[in-house]
Length: 356
Image (cartoon, rainbow, N blue to C red; front, side, top):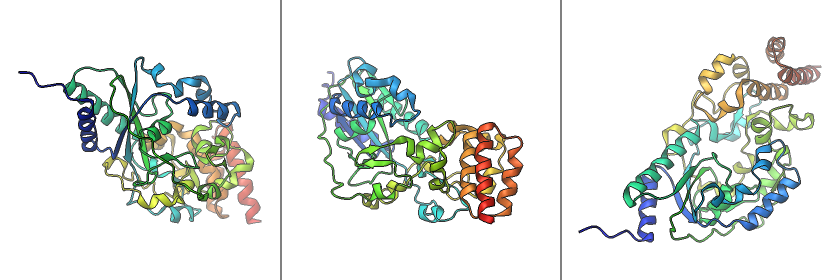
């Protein structure tokens, strides 16, 4: 006698239970309709607020239409995985130390793309073994999807005024991933918003990149400037970058909901190579080979040695006047690429002017 086919409700319950075993701290299911979010995206792109992220323009409405990524898709399974590195040196202390480099807390451990994708692929594969073959596609920043809108619709949290997803029970220090599927699983209720009148994130942005609630100018965002931007960092924004050499967490650090943030349970998200409070001069002295050896396996690796050095040069220009800083900048200048040399020259001029 064959076992009866599990109901969609039972399938979803089993999926959520296995997801929790694999390290996911939230799972929800949404439909594939994102028409209102699509209009918001198109208006944002038309205003040019995406900067040099030309891939967003190329993808166009594909990002808001999951069924075009996976023909036949009727549901999106969204998952959450916490990454807050509780054992790391306090973020505020690092930001207050101009001789240290601040890196976004999500990047202190191993590359989350690999960790999340492996776990999500295992979840989907095991589920197919349990219920039989079904159509699916696993996404962890690997396909153009509006992951925050989908996660909101799946009940995992609401999109805050800083445009990050916030969960009442977990703050915003988590990664998101998706499984697009043709399984008609039961839908979750969308999350309601709970920012209220709070504008702490808007006030905290060092470069005033949050133009208004839910409207971010990526061209001014420090995460964009230090990660996505391949060329010259605008002169007028360099001083405001301070000692942030990879990403920026200021809008999340001030969010009241992050008092509920959960520490990362996955060992791969723990701090590597002392990146929670590295010394700028030590990082700037790394050779390309050292960068390659230490950053391989990290999300930081994709920006490459040149942009990494560019970012540190800006931070050194913002550091207190110091002969050792000037010497380090001069040492790297001769062999620097035109891009790096431009930022070194700015840093040298700033150091010398402040010494004078």
